[in-house]
Structures are given as structure tokens and as C-alpha cells.
Amino acid sequence: MLSLRHLEILFRLLLPPASREHVLGDLHEKCKSPWRYFVEAVSVLGPVIVSRIRRTTDLQVFLMEAMAVYLSFSAAALWLGQKAFLYDQAGFLRLAISTAVTVAGLLLCNAYSDPGKQFSLIKPILQSAGSLALSFLGQAAIFDTCASLAVPFGIMLYGGCISFVLVSTLRMLFSSVFCDRSRVTLPSEVRALQKPNLIPERAVVQQLEEWISNVQIPHKLNIANILPVALLAAVLLVATIWPSVARVIEPRLPHLVIVLLVVYVVRSRAS
Amino acid sequence: MAGIGSIGQFEQLVLTAILALREDAYGVTIHGKVGELAQPKRVSLGAIYVTLDRLEDKGFVSSWLSDPTSERGGRAKRCYRLEALGEQALRESAATAMRVSEVITHVFGKDWARKWKKEWKKEAG
Image 1 (cartoon, chains in turn cyan, purple):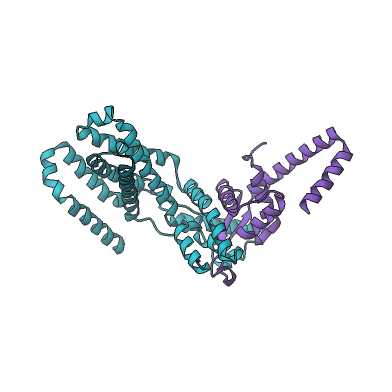
Image 2 (image 1 turned 180 degrees about the horizontal axis):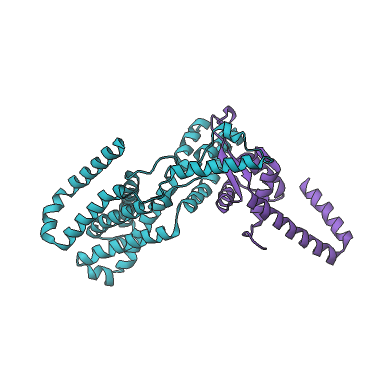
């Protein structure tokens, strides 16, 4: 039987970072026995994740991402000359399944992103890569259970690469959408001013809260941040149009990605 | 309802709980108070969190993290406060509830309303 401490560690991992602190505190205060803690934590987990998804997901960006992923897989299928797969073997439905898994991964990434951390270029890249990895895992599971619904590996690979670039770029362009202001914490001296009958002080506190949340969130597009990905997208586009260029670039693509990441990390550390 | 967006029954309960608890409104206390108000229905803690998030998005309540305490295993509370919009929404829904009650009393008669009140009190313990 797990002890209270072990359960806390387990649910600390499962809860989204933005809700972790107060939900774990509430559970600790409310439940003294491990069984009660487990039952209460399990009942809380689902609603908290759904609520985080609702709060962190912008419908327009979500639809853009879903479209980007689906079109990437479809384009990859057409590019590889798999017309029979698309039209005769329920290809569009099969691609929709892998798109749904990728998009579900992206939604979970939104919910589990830590709003307390500063925005960085690595975050959207990791989120896109993680959700595509989930999609590949999903395909492996489908291949094992119902192979007729699986997508050929070539389409998954090329479609995954294109959607990785597109989704990462989208997430960088709309970075402010993925930030959440719910973790703004004021110092205790400032919070002491929050008496309901002192209206001017409340106004000052609200102003401060707004100021702090504005400081944390990058509202403007940072061209320097999206430049490396734009460069990568341009290289891939050129490689798609001219096969001779693709033959030169293809073996060096992983090196290019690593160099871009290193340049970004060095630049962000320096700033 | 005029002006601000309308609120559901559960949202009314949560806003009332925050109003009643004043500075001591956080997850556990709000859950306890809503449980009292919603009797005999049972309320889950998850539903409270979802509703609090929704009310915060609507601008009806605001929240902040308090300092960590040992009774909570060194974790902070997320405290909630009713905002002007929330107060207005609660006032509007209370007025609606009163109008509904008046109509019911008018149709069924005052004796029936008194009997009804007694039954409520019995149910609430």
C-alpha cells in the first residue's frame, strides 16, 4: 500500500504545474488517510487537466495547428506518390487518426506547460516534437492492434517533419496565446493592502498585478526568436522544390538543426 | 438578465461561498461551504476547481497564491476574492431567485410557502 508521501509524489507528477501547488496543498489539508487521498486526487485530476486545457487553448490557433498537421500528412502522401493510399485505402481517415493523436499531444503540452517559466524558443520545438513522438507511438499501437488503419512509415516521417516545422513556427508566432496569467503572486506586504473596504488600495494592487503579468508575457513578436525556425523552413522549402539541393541538404539536416539550437541557446544565455 | 453574462446555479453557489468566506476563501473552505449550500447534493472538489477557473476567466473573481503553511505540507493556498463583476452577477441572480420565489408564493399561497421553508430547513439539518 502506498503511503501519503508516495501518493503526493505520484500526483505531483500527474498534475499540471500551474495547478500543482494549491491542489496538492488542498488535498494534503483535506485528506489524512492514503485511501481518501487517492480517491479525492483521482477525482480531481481529470477536471483540473480539462480546465487547464480550456484555459490554455486558443480555438483559432488550435484549428490552425490541426489544419497544419493534417495538410502536412496529406502533402507528404501526395509527394510520395501514394494516391492509391489516399483515395482507395481510406487514407484521409487514417491520416485524421494520426492528426488527432498529434493534436491531443499538443493540447496536453499546453496544459502541462509551466506559466511561471519565461518563454523560450526550445519550448514550442519540444512541444511539437513531443506530440509528434506521441503520434508515432499511437501509430505503433494501431499497427499492432489494427494494421489496416495504420499510416505507412514514409508518410508519417515526411508528414511529421513538415508538421514539426509548421507547428513550431505557429507556436512561436502565437507565443503570447500560450501564456497564462493565473500564477501571478504578489509579495505579502502588497497583499496586506487587499482589504475589501479600501478601494484605492485595491486599485493599486490590481494595477500592480496587471503590471507584473505584462512583464512576464511577451506580447510582441520577437523576430530574432523565430529567425532560426524561419531559416530551417526556408531550407526545407528549397529542398522540396529542387531535388538536387535536397540531395545535398538531406544528410546535413540534423547538423543544421543542432547548430541552430546551439546558436539560439548561446544567444539567449548572452541576453 | 442585463449587462454582464449570466451565471449558472453552481457558479452562484461558488460565488456565494466566496462572498461568505471573505478573506478565508480557498479550495478547501470553498468546497466545504458549497457543500453546505448545495445540500443534499454532493459536490466534488474537481468541480469547484473547474468553476473557479471559469469564474476567474470571466473576471468575476481574482486569485493569488498565499504564503506556504506547514499544515498544508509546505504548500501555498490559492485564495479567491469576489470582484465587482462577480458581485453584480450575484446580485442579479439573487434578484431573479427572489422574483421566482415571489411568483411561487403568489400561486401556491403563503401557507404552502411556510411549509416548504420548514421542509428545506429539515433537509438542511
